Amino acid sequence: MISHEKAALLNSKLPSLDSKLLYPPRNLIDSIWKDKRASSKAPIHVESYESTGMEATEKLRKLWEWIQQQPPTYTESTPKPSDLQVGTLITALPSVAYLLNLRGSDIPFRPFFHAYLFVGLESAIIFLDSSQVVGETLDYIKSLGVECQDYNEIWSFLRRKSWGEGKLLITPQMSYAISLMLSPHHYTLAPPFVEMMMSVKNDRELIGLRKAHIRDGASFVRFLAWLEIQLSEGNNISEDQAASRLTEFRRGGKHFIGLTYEPISATGPNAALPHYIPRIPTARVIERDTPYLK
Image 1 (cartoon, rainbow, N blue to C red):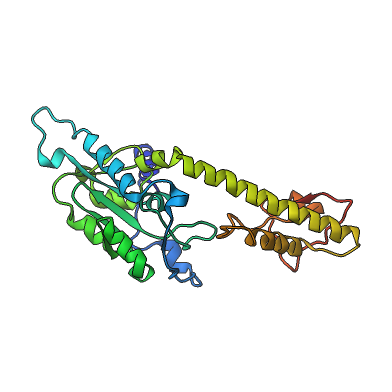
Image 2 (image 1 turned 90 degrees about the vertical axis):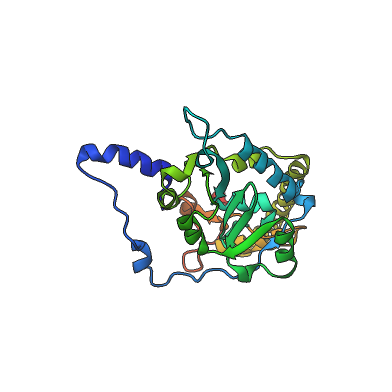
């Protein structure tokens, strides 16, 4: 709910206002969210080398090297085992998916899945819903030397300090609940190394991006041609119908997995509404003499 960075800022400012942060044992939103959607059970799958351009083993090797390069906590004497950086905890879902070349569908419009990932110098553990990894996916994870544990076991892992002596590298954007559980004696703040790896695209990723844009552009041109014909023939096409039709064109393209956001399809005054999403009761008919935002 709140990052370590933001919590640290608040903790530094609030005392001057005779205030402090409180952390209820139960999430207050959860206590009133009666129709909360059940957690996804959709299977997690392995992304091919054709798309990623780098094997997960190579990504893990780079991460291990980075961990080993991090200096121990400052000390005037010889560093003790408790001063050394022995692993990292990754909670950002895009980073977990990228590092292990895994994809899921737990998050609408995003190819990610709920998980935490611990990577140590001698072991690695992914905390996730075990029902989502079966067969080849489970075998693949094991082949990487990564152990699977239940999603909620992360808290026991942190509470017991199961990695042994030494500190975990965490990012300032890490959930404050995690850094609070660890306590300052057991973590070191560090830049998000995996995110930095993600930001530098390899050749296969760049080729994939270009081809994806070309395919999506072709789908959009087909849609515009279809819409032009429909309006020229005097057919009534509503905003929601147009949105559905564009999705059909995109779905027919090679390698289509899903949309990146809910379709925006707005005409006339609806085009002035921020993030307008057409719904049948409010959808307007598209006219040739009014602006159309798609």
